[in-house]
Length: 125
Image (spheres, helix red, strand yellow):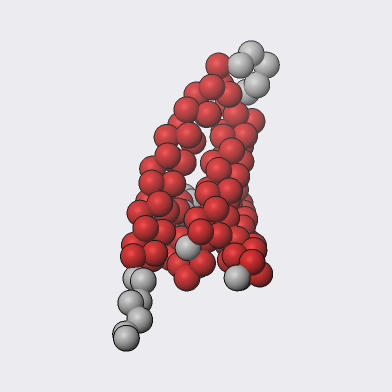
């Protein structure tokens, strides 16, 4: 008998990563708006806090996606961070402002979380 190779896992992981990117984008704007509505927090601090929430959400999502679909460890962080990747390419002042530190830090955090999710899955197997 031939073994059926399960290729749908990569597709599901890619779908979940894109959903994560969309939800993270919404969370970025809602948390930014929410933090600026709090009295005593200036706009710059609210922006930093919003990007931290954004990065943590993506990292947690990457951990769970890579734990479930461990064969998609390469594509999940890329697709989950696609908004930040696009902004780093399109926005002309991205690398000259302090924004790149938060975004790239989020990329590194999501890669680490993906690796941890992968190793947690492979350890259980």
